[in-house]
Figure (cartoon, chains in turn blue, red):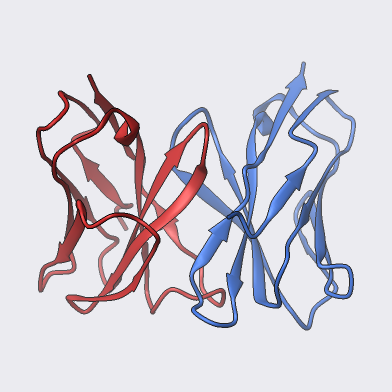
Length: 111
Length: 115
């Protein structure tokens, strides 16, 4: 079963708007990572947040982590058409460290 | 540095056949992991190899196997192909053992279609 589940499944916005997607997970984790995938290609690592961190920034990306709610959010500010992609969260179990991916959020940014 | 490369990029096979996929990690990376991505199941971990040894294995049948060579290149083999094996197979490399502490670098994937 999937450890991380992204919400919403699909998101459609206009260029310049902010996009927020969420990830929920079930068991305790060491770290949580966000990846981007363009049209059935390989994944690109975006950001890693450790379990003892609450917020992290990278350029136009902002990630938060709430371990009490077992959830994370990815905010993309001032979105661009090039941000159109699927976004996945990946968590690792403290038991076996195997990265487990959610089903992803499909983001479409209209120019 | 060259990225992770996977060959072939596309493959069409028929049921019952076997297939071998290849992955060359980023130079210096010793960990190679394999994932299967399908619309129905999403991204699922197959296995991880580190220093020529399988370190972790996902919940897949024994028809799925792999190996890693001394130069860290890895191959994945699927025997007795089934229609449900049609998927995008992704390889990822990392400088250390896979865990949440390190970034994985993904290849472009091999698209396998089983007819």
